Amino acid sequence: MPRILDTYSLRLFVAVCEEGSLTRAAQREALVASALSKRMAALEQSCGVPLLIRRPRGVLPTPAGEALLGRAREVLGALERACSEVDAFSHGAQGSVRVLASPSVLAEQLPEDIARFLEQQPGLRVSLEERISHDVVRSLHEGSADLGVLWEAADLKGLDGLPYRSDHLCLAMAPGHRLAFRQSVRYEETLDEVSVGVAPGGLMDRLLRRQAALAGRLMEHRIQVSSMDAACRIIAAGLAVAILPREAAMPHADLGRLALVPLDEPWAERRFVVASRPQHLASAASRLLAEHLRTAALPEGLVGLELDGR
Image (cartoon, rainbow, N blue to C red; front, side, top):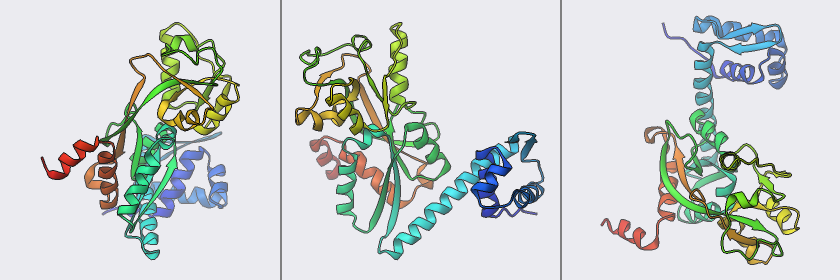
């Protein structure tokens, strides 16, 4: 006999696992703890296996609970997307795509590429949000996002990917800095400078720490910010330097606020991808946008060849 799992119980189960506590999950979902506990017991009875390990100081999912947790997130994410798409139709749209992008990508040409897509597809709706790469990948696996645009160094196992644009890392500093007139600079030369870090814990942060360790050095940011724009303003004020993508920092450099010196390292070029769940799980609108972003990154002549079918 098939088991019937209602979405409300699944949402409560996800809340319990994420909070690690029945009490905190009940507060999050505006329930009394006893009612939530009964719901979890009924869910376990319906599944026929224990889903939670109850401890004096909280709860943990069992192996079966871990399996259900992943599937529950997928179901709830798909339901959220379905509701969003239906709501979009009530406003005249013909589909919607939720895109998550890493800070570097969002600070570069992605907004303009999406704007051109919407000019060609006025009936579609695209939401665009900033997330670090780990959260982008997790949201794609959970089904709560349609597309992710991020550095290809992320763990993309189980996802489809199309090539997108690339960027080039440089040392960004105030125009009067002692290194501002160099033709290039090695990363190790920057480690004695007061620096600002962007999106701590992200792929870029981990890359720079790893490269510093390989050089026998320790990277330590004196200042941490979450956005590229905030970092550029701090650098322009002469408070710190930073390793930033040249493409993201160029608007500030063009206004004379920053000096940019290329980073002379084999890993200084980063390539990005448009990631999604396997094609058979993707909506027509998300496939259309993914293909648009892929072609937007191609050289103009190559785009012409593709359009001609040659």
